[in-house]
Length: 458
Ligand SMILES: Cc1ncc(COP(=O)(O)O)c(C=O)c1O
Image 1 (cartoon, helix red, strand yellow):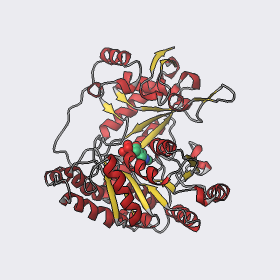
Image 2: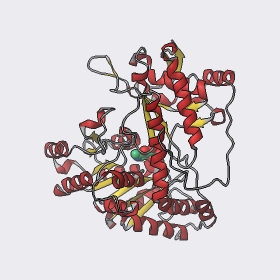
Image 3: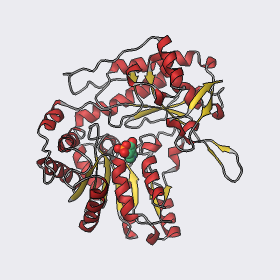
Image 4: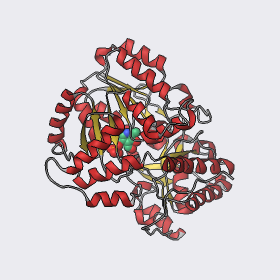
């Protein structure tokens, strides 16, 4: 039996959840058009849809909220957040935003011109969309190991440095307004990037005069993976590792809804004062005055406190240990998952579990629906519903390499018993896997269909 690290907190406030009856779950699922995004949260027992903005804030964060200064300009809350960001990242300038994608929007509005290219290990979907919205073209250059679900490479989020050099030479540095890396690599399974790789990325961008921005939503989880896995870092504190990471870059975009453990918020931080001034202009236009951005003063205080809490070593040992526990127990009962597990989620290989359901009949969708019907658990399909595309040249449907279901774990929210319940539910489903059937889409919008499509069982 894998070990489960004890939670480095105790519970002071609880939120009630309930498991409605199977007949009620069936009715709820039918009413939602067999789309888990259409379910009401109160009808869900364990919600593993996302780790973004769903974590539990601490007593220290709630008391920081009471200290929030709601002055329109120059609020104390702004300066408290500035101090936290500066101490951890070293960046001297920042603008608060309502969440991560607003920071992406500002950076892309300022720097991306039509036809320009922006490389990364893998862009998250909102980052990709913001680059495309400015006429730019994103490029993903993650190492080949990332595509193999059973390759246990310790840093599967690393960038392919050879491919990056070739890309810059081919496209020309003048056509690359900035380069990125995402830590951890959410789109690639929450996999970390090593410091050695981050140094090489930084050197490569800087050798060509290209500014380097880190998408750092899960920077603390990435720092902890470096502590665990990279030679020479075992004795360093996560905050020291985080500071070393940020020292390699010119700026960072962060959705604070992840490793700052808040329900809303984000920021764009940088070294360049000129860029900061331009960011302020964009911020005033789209979000708000530079000392509050898109947030209330109290939100800034919750982020300032959460940034430090997210870096505590006991918390990170529990956080990464909880994800590893869930993955190891699932492997133990014969459920195929992406290995090694990432920081914030466990990805089930639904295609491997349900080989009798073809990609065109959406095995990930079938598993996500069944998880709800069996256990009241909500998880997200990341497979052909989300990513299958018609090739405009051939008119044929192109399916993604893997048909996955993501179990994203909210921070400080669920206990070992909840994780065990998820394992038991999946074991029960796996035992009667042959009886599961595929789905057909009955109604879908043109873009981002996974959010609102309706389905019918086959
Ligand atoms: C890696 C990454 N970048 C950016 C974002 C966007 O952040 P937000 O949802 O706060 O807009 C997310 C959100 O999940 C993410 O995981």
